[in-house]
Length: 80
Image (cartoon, rainbow, N blue to C red; front, side, top):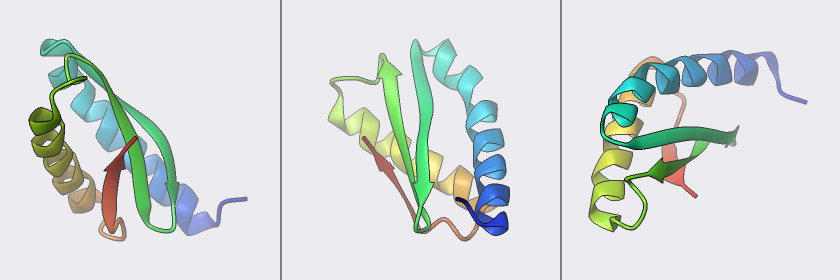
């Protein structure tokens, strides 16, 4: 069961990811929320982002920056 603070964080994270979706879609990609635990956000990329490690790395940094601006308690973002 999630604590209230974690539930609040998950809602904010989902809002950020939703706001990023149009940019990903415009480039033939997709970003998906997988889980949030122990202050680590797990996501995955689909579509045009598959198979390009350099794109994934730079995009992951951008996602982490956006998420941490909205949810400072997120320590890092991992791509699965």
